[in-house]
Image (tube, one colour):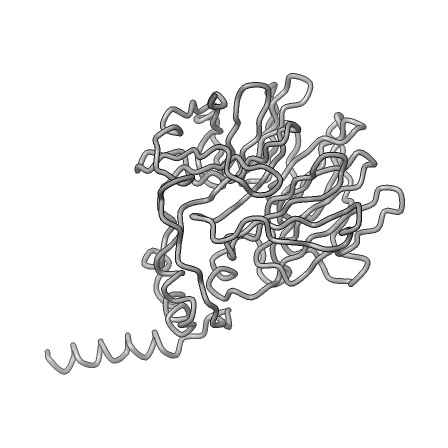
Length: 348
């Protein structure tokens, strides 16, 4: 029996050491997470999120758009639901959604690319690759539209597709991009590459700049579109207390940032120990590091100053929060996996 136990343990050890994994993790220096004090002081404001459409048979309302008194929600199974029923199924995974000036719903679909859907439910694929570098869009994530109709959007990773987010996090290589699609020329151009899981996208006033999140670097960057700094970027927030997901503008100087969850001790502590991250992916998925249920959103200005800090740390939290959008005096919350979308009054 002792020999059997020994050989069983040996087989398990060899499995953990030799079983191939689809990543080549790199060593990097993760900053020490900020204390949950000051502008990040813990609170329970998001405890009172009101959840709607919780029992409609779908889950994962990643993003929410309100247009002409209708609510549009994109789900895990490709379905985009409207207040009056099913609107369209992308047969992919709709993530970021915004309406253009012609009442078309523009969708960053993680599987299908950038698509446009008119009010009759007819879809057109706008882009599946960048024309400037020829690289296929691997994981279209979020978007915003400028006053001249150009669509700025993120490709989270051109290496790992939808559902492989943990591979991207564990490997920690810069496979993301910020792109722009021009409806006049029908061409897509890469503005920035080598980004760490490029995510949320939000334009600034007069389309002077675009803010975007890098989820796996815990930071927010600003890419200038106009002025003396046009074509350059700068970090406006770094070492965030969680993983930034989508970002949106309320058109009044506030940018709402969804934080997927708080920082993960395993990822931070093994940043410079790639072997251990590779080892973790050899474990059965239920034993791999999991995000903590934590509702978290920030309201910031264009320079990265925290104006609102909204949290709720509990097992019943509406989480993970992947998008926050303000309509009038309410915030609307999307989630990658939760059933139903959330709503709460904007704090005074």
